[in-house]
Length: 508
Image (cartoon, rainbow, N blue to C red; front, side, top):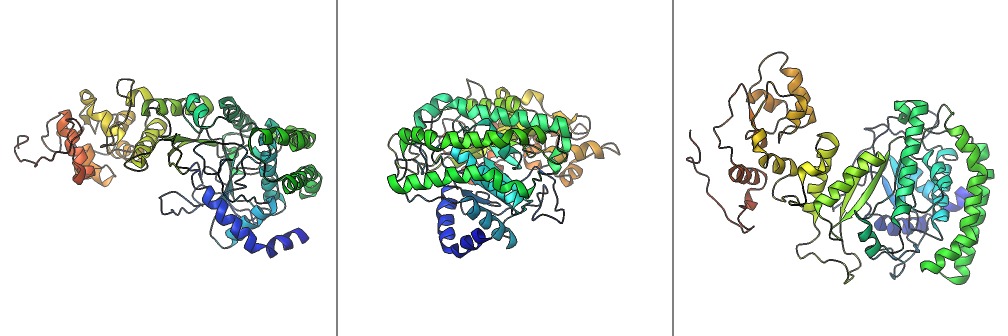
């Protein structure tokens, strides 16, 4: 209780930290807020129903539905692209676990948020940082009885014990891949090792599978409930390690670089690891048999920075496909590179941040996850990048006109999904409605089909909506005009040309 009062009395200091650490977290876009169906139970604070978290958007368009913060902007690594790299001269601050808990609860009570997204720079060592994140989640779930949604970052290089313990307290975990290729990671993040990123990804994947095998597919519906009486005995070792870090920093200044990592591992890393092992084994053994304990029920996600290195869209989508297929990833996020450090070794874009490229990658990602497409269908080594003028589905369709037009009244579900302008919901509605009669263009428009894109690729009862020519350049021009009339570009070298629409382009 005394600790809570002291935290509350320093509210101005907490808000100053919040200003700094919330701003530092804005470049991490792997921030999701759905995937579980856990409603309030009358005993705990909050719920995590799949549609329960309201979304708001910042000025740059990014979702800020959760309290999205870093635990600390201290970092022993010197990644060239990161605003918090060790060589930058920025003000360094850190929350304590209690402060994060107070912020989360106070913001929730005021209806500002319905969940927490918690990431962190690497302070001391990966083990020490992961230990602090675990302590924060443990406090939230037990001492503060927070029942809401929590998304936490896994720290590459942290011990498997700490990652596993944290996984039983979080709804979603994510480990950032950072760059699509190992070469890009070595170039811009020399302190990070690809294998240290993939190892916790695999551990989280296996933990999710094992949890669902033990509890069933719907294990996402509930959450761990830990006896509050065990709190002090489990956290004592973590607190001792934390005090050592504070004392060392006060005497020697802020830690930096590779030397700091080695010192941290010797001073606190082993202490935290031993503490995790001492009480982690008993929890792990009970976790898979406990009726209400589940591991990362909302799945895992990751993030890739786009445009900082020279990977093509084809390479990026191939990596994403592998992450979905081999690591059971729930979401892959794409973050357009922003040169926040103005580093001469980093690319500078004359036309600004490549947000349109990021947008096309997200559209293609949906095609991989929901529409049955493969990466090598959308792109190839001969055609390695998306056409920025039209979306990837339209681009695929105009390059495969031999598969069109599709008859709405007879095509199967997966064939309908390949038609531009037809989504998963409208395809299901078409299948259901045509059992009762033949469909026409007016009917499918009411079902949600976007006819300005679909009309070039479908027939209803054997007839097209208009007698349009099935020709790639013509359809591409119309699709570009329908999407952005002011940017009607023809495919002759990329120069801007405008063509007046004519009534005589096709027979009436």
